[in-house]
Image 1 (cartoon, one colour):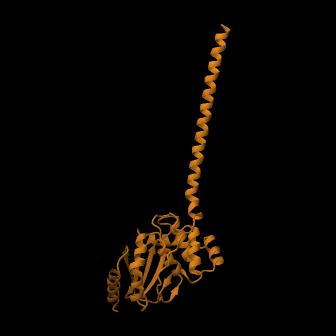
Image 2 (cartoon, rainbow, N blue to C red):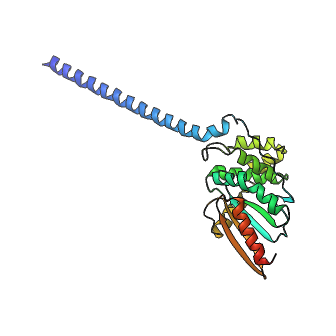
Image 3 (cartoon, rainbow, N blue to C red):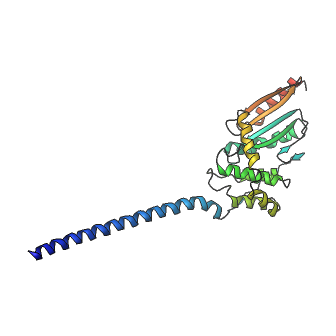
Length: 251
């Protein structure tokens, strides 16, 4: 009888031991999966800033007159056009590639239009504001537009996918010949965060809902008038709006 009880107890202990080991393996497996998941998430955040910067495409050479930080042209021009843009926005790049230079040549160079670029905050994501910060910091050294051009020339295919990771922005800064100590101090200190936030607030107040959008301002008989131009329009659309405004002003 005693031997039978001993055998039953041994079986129960064996089953308990099996269950204990099974639970231990399950816990270890769970911890392992959580650890792998955490590492993967960390990798997604860290990799864009540690991966090789990759090749940098050269920006087109664009002639701009009377450059002043993020503005170009005569500040006393009869027409002011303010662009609200996002460096990650593909339609903003299309405007840059297909229309901007013609607008500069036909209307800014002759003093008709004063053109100003504004970021649109973190509209698409964190790399949008990072790129804007880089452009404004380059503006401290008189090279806002050079950074503007190289940013669009190297726009990525995936939003917030590392095209404007900090490491690549530093490479762009080196490529356009910035003083890197000054640039790093400005960029790492988020010097222009308030301006970038203000850009977005002003855009929202102006009823900007998408990028690129353009606010054209002019004065007729002492009354300020504004026209909103939305999207990556061709030079023909800008020409029609500008010529109509000039006619309204009697010019």
